[in-house]
Length: 136
Ligand code: NI
Image 1: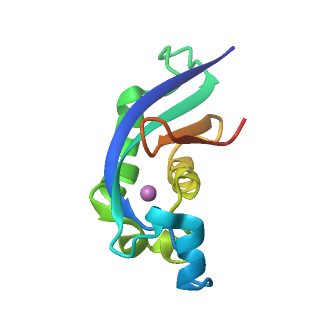
Image 2: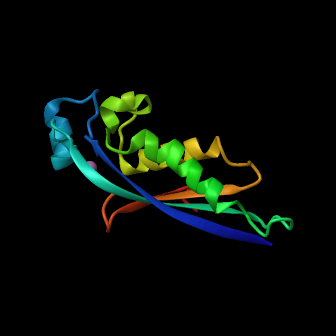
Image 3: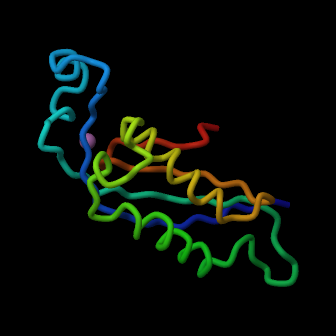
């Protein structure tokens, strides 16, 4: 029997949506305000869900203290109060859209959490706009 356990976390970060292969006009036309050359910030909220079998010795799918530390060390310490375009190497050639940030967070946690457990990340860029990876 599998169970999903989840933890919420948040970080603040700045970004700009910009495709360097496009003209300024096309960037402005496609991304609008999100293309602002002086960047803009979001209060990102995320829900990390871990699904797997309960370990009969602990009663846990994953120790929440361990999950909390992975999120703090791998996500919050790395992304909080950063400019995603300028400070995070991963986004040198990848547009830091909510979709791509969500995949990045998933990748960072995937490296830390046992492959026997499934991970899902839901990332809120605003209270009303959110993305989820994997999609199903
Ligand atoms: Ni934005």
